[in-house]
Picture 1 (cartoon, rainbow, N blue to C red):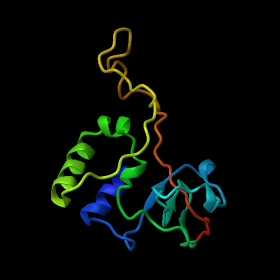
Picture 2 (picture 1 turned 30 degrees about the vertical axis):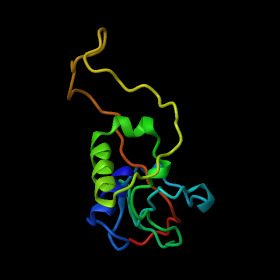
Picture 3 (picture 1 turned 60 degrees about the vertical axis):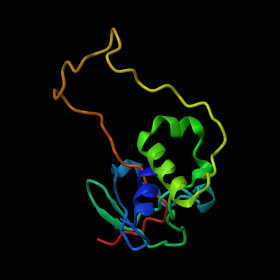
Length: 144
């Protein structure tokens, strides 16, 4: 959702920009209760699975309007360089500090080149477990 917030702030997307997600059929749910959605969650307009394309008809959940700086912890901000640069640029332009979210303890990130770990061996072999997807945020009323 941070990516969407950044794109929204830059004016690259707006409420009319379709949001599309790809998921497996088994990940599809009939609806996500609106009270479970947070203000930074991005509701999707189109869901694509291997067997169907679904146009989401419930539009009651608003799309985020930008980056919610007061939800972004200092720990999270310190891990994302582009957000640090963007925040500094906005603060300089506006002449005041943007709000900051509460501190949080983030899970550790993977270390590159760590001993004992696979260093790319077997890359490209076999079936991947990769995944993609996410999304939801509305009732899935099928329209093929």
